[in-house]
Length: 119
Image 1: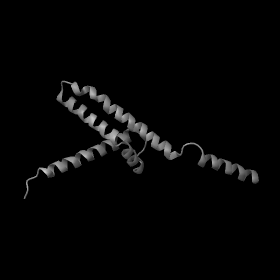
Image 2 (image 1 turned 30 degrees about the horizontal axis):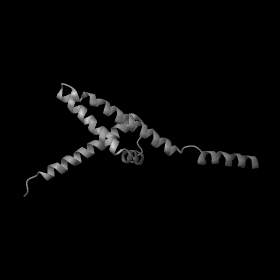
Image 3 (image 1 turned 90 degrees about the horizontal axis):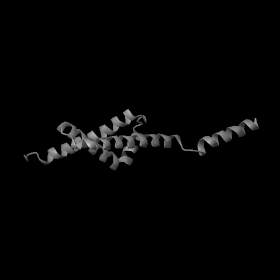
């Protein structure tokens, strides 16, 4: 009986007090995916010199997304953790795109309100 209790205590100590916590692994996995997303967006900057206006616009949008994610990385990762987003590229990318689009929409609304005729 004493051996079982001792072994249980050792196992519990190993689980709780050694190595990174599961939450740390989760956060680190999200950070890697965000970094890959930023790199992917930045890679599209080579298309800024394209002859196609649509491709240039898409490249510019990708550069803006990369800048947004780089500048707000800690806040975005905190939001990913708080929302329990699965650490899978498609889920993280969808969340990041939603956050970026929300920012753009809020800026458009502010701009529209600034230029609305006074009544």
